[in-house]
Amino acid sequence: MKLDILAFGAHPDDVELGCGATIAKEVSLGKKVGIVDLTRGELGTRGSANLRDNEAAKSAKILGISVRENLAFADGFFLNDSKHQLEVIKMIRKYQPEIVLCNAIDDRHIDHPKGSNLVSDACFLSGLLKIETEVKGNYQEKWRPKQVYHYIQWKNIEPDFVLDVTGFINQKTEAVLAYSSQFYNPNSNEPETPITSKNFIDSIHYRARDLGRLIGVEFAEGFTSERYVAVENLGKLI
Image (cartoon, rainbow, N blue to C red; front, side):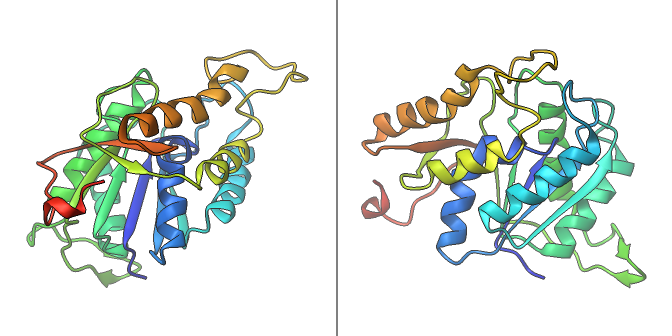
């Protein structure tokens, strides 16, 4: 299956939090979108890997994506090395996306910049003919995405561009809250973490609203780019 967009996240819920509204919007426009989670989030303070598998599947249905896979790398301990790069390359070549979305280039959780660099490097390497990969005995053709964009996570990184997601923020929030084990629950007896506060859930709206304010729309999500952002003509700008 060829996808238009393939989004990678170090953990299940990274993609939803970073660019869930963007994905919902692109799906509504007829784009084929997939998600690949690098780990099962087994080191998460709350819940379990099996529970997060179920939550990720539920979230995928809410977003309406075409496919979701998990590479089951070691949460907290995966590396940007040839072993892990080759597994990511296989995903890129399998789905041949035009655009790849991945973790923030700098963030609070150490897996986020690691995942960012891993996927970015794999996108380049995937385009090299002499790197050979196969899946289930089938040789894969080389493939390099046209664009690699990094969504914004915990830190308020200055975006290179912002995307109007007005009308899709509630769908994003619903997809995030599909991970019910991870976020605010006043009746939970599990330990508190930086993402279990009500303020964190509220931040989904107020951060998107603030980015939207800056470009004259209601809600927006921001991204950083590895190269200059080009526009076809001045009329294409909001």
